[in-house]
View (tube, rainbow, N blue to C red):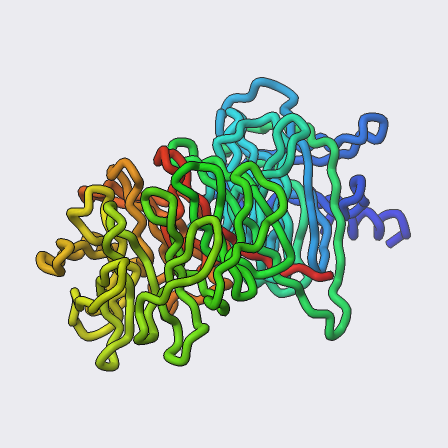
Length: 493
């Protein structure tokens, strides 16, 4: 066999869908999954643009089929791009994705930011091989710049419109052993079609952690619009802070950090430390009276663990309410005369009330297991709480005297914590963990869910990496249109 025939024979063994030569900053182009019409990828250096043509039924459910232009990387990364389409297209849900993928298997774990042909933008992710794809959606429509970041095991998706600041779409913790495949995926959403995306302004940075290098915690204070699910960043800092309260006048957020209470304008800016007198070592259970004059705080300053104090909302000396601990505040009655809280007495955590002026406490629940997170409805006729009396935490409600206790969530997939009724009395927002998670720790995949206050099926309104401190306390805007919460990341210095 002559040398030319040998070369031709070897080339014939290479799949026609695979391009071994570099394409721009990427290493290979390949069709992933069951493909009837071969895709292709090319780099247009004069335009600094990628032209990617893909077929495939979908990037969704338990298997994917699409054209993938990618390279192998290890470590942290930031990947952003702008997406356009060469033609009108046949399928509104054709997709162009900034993607991180474990393997080229069609059922591989992955995370992406998918820009659809009709302008829809989502974070999509598959948490295990062969698992069903999940998604978090933003109301921001394409054209827009999308960004996918990997910080250790945490993937964060965000979007920027018209050159504005990046705002979150969602985040998920997903372990993918290095190396991973990073690149641009294009799928036609129809196996009989080919669709061509034009990708520009591609930015890909990568960093491998040094031995012994420790990650810094980053916390982000966000707001979420209940009607649209749009998330906006108010404040971000490389420290741990928790549990934002929205002041009743709509002007300030209150949160705890390093044992102190801080305020920050709703529009953003620099936080200011609030004077809380003798109450230091403050934790993430705090909130404002309906008239905005007083702040209830839970503090580990005393000898009996966390105890409840009241301070002026503008700062000042703290007045002790519960000399017995541990006690964790969760709600004011609408008239400001009563506090409701979780406390450990008789070797069990239950729901209690106490006059805000001080006095004897009243026990409202006595079931075995944790009863926690009590909060009054705005009309004062109901106290919502969560309970582990029958297993993983579920939401409950009862009358203010503790009678009429009734379970109101029952989904098998979730453990539900910290119900917060909206000021207009129409909604309850709460944080849900996977049922396998014990308690409410930080650094977990969680969702925020919304349901009618009268009962009904909850819906997911946000997907994030958070947990303890994300949504522990009342955090509705006074007009009931938004909530405030925190999310977490762990970044290299």
